[in-house]
Image (cartoon, rainbow, N blue to C red; front, side, top):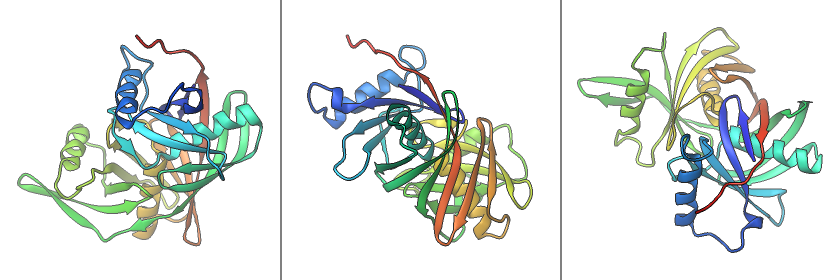
Length: 261
């Protein structure tokens, strides 16, 4: 199944249909192949789905370059949309690499579904400076179960992608980092661009939207709820106590067979 959440696209593969258990190296090689946008189906990553003893499903996220990631908020929402289309359960529990997430259906229109996900708590650190040649940038490290670096800017420069890629290569981030460039557009609105580990630029990001909003709230730049506007669409992030909630849509695109030769 292919699904898209605000332009952040994923392939959903049911591992229970495999004839044998695949090794991580096999999964990585296959993910790179199927995510290729010219010789494969094309996607930002694959959510590999497996049965779980206490959750509705367990998922393993492999990025387009074959690297493993802890979680994608958008990818998790795509899986929730798939499960709802199959089982019609409005509340879904999904075991991710960043813990158990609960997805609640809040709306539906044909093949598009809206969910709110309880994303857990966010860890916001003090501002960190990263050297870029003779200059430096300053940003807020945020963990949503995966690492983020949020940089507040006045505008998106033409070379922001090059700068984001350079920041990702910094020795400051030993496990890599997802990067967000954020413009404050009011107390409840931000505009964001995303550059993710193992993918590069994406039109949207669920955990990136959470990190952007939480960093804006923590620094007094915005107040809950925060609408995060990106090229792929808008998601809403709110805080309730220490918990972060993410609301947005996911659309089921197509179902098909991929020929392995």
